[in-house]
Length: 202
Image (cartoon, rainbow, N blue to C red; front, side, top):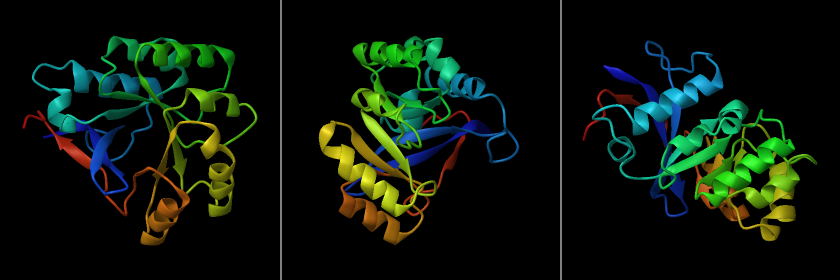
């Protein structure tokens, strides 16, 4: 029997697994079922931190858990219901970059939560948020290598965030990201998502 989520490993420059991203999956198909993002977020968090004998330590090997948060989940303060020690709050790319979100992220950081921006594409609205980021995730399928290079060269030294190259699918992309100075790596070239069995106990 399978759970309603899968995990995908995140690696450092030494190819050591340092975290997992948790992805909501349909109970019968190994894919995202198209439900509302905040519902998927709540389901994953409940499975990770609440459900009976299911423990975050068991399903993540004690490593940090990256979980996607919709705009509504962030505004509602959903993350505050869960311990910050091993939770990485991923701000989804379709969130509006408004002042309400900005203040919510300031509050989360002040309370010890790690903030990651998913599929980040630089724009005038989002640049002020870079100072709140612990991790910036760059989707190698969504941007050209030239665009990625320009972003890294312009902003890497101005802020203290780590760079995560995601959707790395070839050796060439992996080596390119390493040479450019990325800190973390995620994608099929390194590890595919694995559906978690129920009840996730070691």
